[in-house]
Image 1: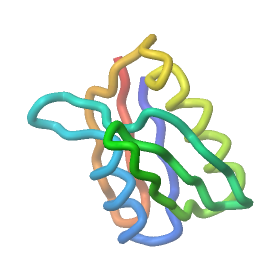
Image 2 (image 1 turned 90 degrees about the horizontal axis):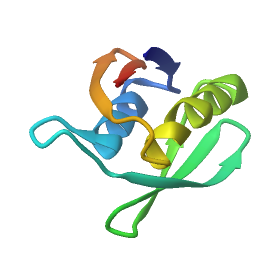
Image 3 (image 1 turned 90 degrees about the vertical axis):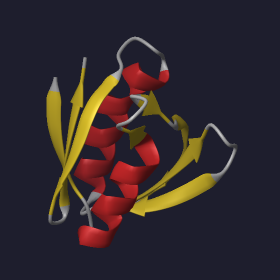
Image 4 (image 1 turned 135 degrees about the vertical axis):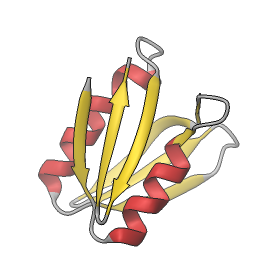
Length: 93
């Protein structure tokens, strides 16, 4: 399954792609969504750190949260991420 998430800018898209998926080991670093504040998403990672990501709007925050939940619950695995300017394409298996 694929989805496109629109971030606030190119930097935020690159940051989100780098934080949630490492291609070499096909690892997913995200362990949870800590908070949602309008178009801002605060995620936690395996190393217990928290990171803020700015998405375009509240719709994209909800879309990302719904999409990534099955990965957090270990029902799916992320297969790839691709950054196209301020849009991140995420594919899960």
